[in-house]
Image (cartoon, rainbow, N blue to C red; front, side, top):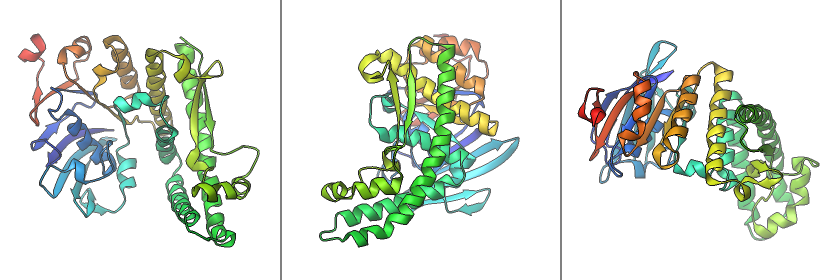
Length: 369
């Protein structure tokens, strides 16, 4: 599964785009601010209907314009599918797949599975739980088809309960109205998370056995004590929730915890080792996906040279390629990828300058300089 072609109009600072890709590696280079990340955002729109940097339409649409379009051709098991997304300020997204209107972004996400790695991704183990939970849920969404519906129900129930907690003079009886739906959906998504978290953690552990340069323990925290049911903990914490006007415990507090010798990795490991944890986490996500569906997700890697040295970057690229992922990688200088390009003749290179994207060939001056 890979993206064959991309056409873009009115995305940020990009000039109109119409390019065809390699099914393996696509390298995009150019100065900062030239449009490299905007190019990756266009690919993200094709997968989820939104940018990997923001779920809002306005920032991604070119200045002073009201709409933007992204069109792509995607090869799935040898068949070409055509996907189009139009984003309009104030109206959201209009999506068509093979000339049929689609009303749900989740259809795109299942059709074109994609992960994005940028500089914020390398804060995976040092930042808050929201990002780690989001990545776990990406896997659960794909592996467990009932998860998305359960998650939407839980999110709405939680939103309603939190609104009630902020209502002055609310009675406990009124608060209990949303409890059955909150508990049933919360326990459903937790059960699915636990199963996928075990799958993911076992895969991470296997990767560390191959390259065990330090001890790592990875655990799933469901968001409340394992000694109580969700209903019990919500009832027990009701007074605290009323005081803080927020639901303090539950699946929305779930996390993946990384420790080494019973200490947080952020307190012990070097920055290079922390990056190693992040890389293996993403590799494990892709490997779990591949084992579940027989194909690997597409990877967007923004500004790789700023985070990894050439040797480690080449190892990571080759690991993703071994799974069959199509890669889109950006960087400022092309010579950072010289050794990789010499080994991979199927790679394509694109230069971005002032929003204009042009493909370069191996015989061009850029490759011989």
